[in-house]
Length: 458
Image 1 (tube, rainbow, N blue to C red):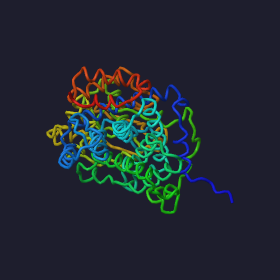
Image 2: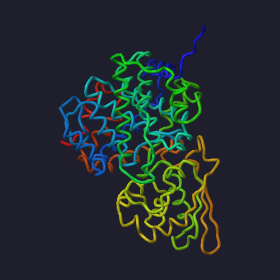
Image 3: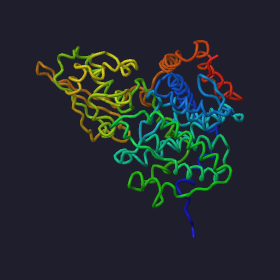
Image 4: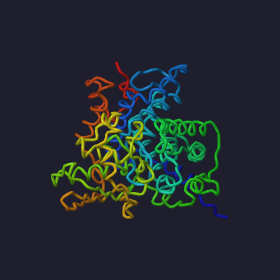
C-alpha cells in the first residue's frame, strides 16, 4: 500500500531540505527588508503603554536566561523573551503582512530566531533560511484557511503565526523531517485566538503574536526532545482546516512546494500606516483622489469604498472608537483622519479627543463600505472608491495594491527612513545606523548574536 505523505510531512520535508545556497538573491534581499522592518517594529513596540503589562509580568517573574528583552535588555528564558519581543513585534500595527492569505511572517519569526541566536550560534545565512522557511509555511497555511477563518471570528495571526514560528524555530534548531512534522503538529494545539477585541475592545490582541511566538518555539523545542503530534494536523477530520475553516483545502499547503519565484517571502508586504493591513489601499486611494481633484472635506457628501469582505468583518463596523485599538481597526476613522488631518500618523490614533470629534464622526457617517467581489486572492487588498461631491460630481478611482506590497514595494530609502522613525525613541541614532548596516550584509555574519545586542539601549 502506497501511503501518501501528509501536508505536515511535505511541509516538514521542504523546510528541512531548504538550503541557503538555493534561495534566489531577490528572496534574500526581501528577507533583509523584512528583518529591518521587523526590528523597527519591535523598537517602537517597546515604547507603547499597552504592551507594558506583558513586560511587567515577565520582569516580575524573570529568573535569568540566555535571551534579552528588546531595549531594556533583561536576561530572561527563551519563552519570556519571545513573549515580550513578539508582543512588541506586532504591538503597534506597523508590522508586515501577507498580500494573500493572512498572518504576519516577520512578526512571528524574527523574535523567535533572534532569541534562539542568543542561546546558540546562528549565522546570517541560517537566519535568512529560517525566515524563508517560516514565511513559506505561513503563506501556505493562511491561504488554506482564509477567508472562512475570519468569518468564524478567528484572528489570523493567532491561527497562522504559531506555524510560522514553529517552522522558523525548527529550522534554527536543525530538526530532522520527523521532528519538524511533529513541531508543526504540536503547533496546531496552540493555534487559536478570536477577533472579539475589534467588537468590544481589550488590548489582548496586542499579545496574540507573542503567544504565537511562544507556541511555535515550544512546539519545535518539544518536538526536539521527543513529543509527538498528529501528522494529519492540517487535513484530518479534527485538523485545523476543517475545525477553523469548515473545509479541507489542502492544495495551497502543498502545491508547487519548491524554491522558485513563487516563494512566500515575496508575498510579505510592509506597512506605511499603524493600522490593519486591509486599510492601506483605501487610505492611499482616498489621498490620491483628493489630491488629484483638489477635494476638501466640506465638499464630500458620500464616500463609497469597495473592499475585501475581511474589512467588513475586521473593524468595518467601528464608527466611534473607544480605545486605541478600535481607532487603529476602524477604516472610517482612518479615512476621516486622511480627509481632515491629511495624514495617518500614530499620534492621531492615540489622541482620544479625535475618537469623539464631531467632524470626524460626521465624515465616518458619510462612508459606505461594501464588499467588492473582485477584491479577493491576489487582489485581496485592492480598493475601488467613489466620492460624491456637493456640486453633483462623482469622482472614482481604484488601486490594485497599496504601497509596500511586493508588486509596489517600499524603496530601500523608505524602509530605512521608517526604521529610523520607529527606532529613535528607543535607541540612539548611532545604534540605529549600525543596525541598518548590519542587516544590509546579514548574510555574511558568522553569528547574528551581535545584532541581538544592538537592540538593547546602551
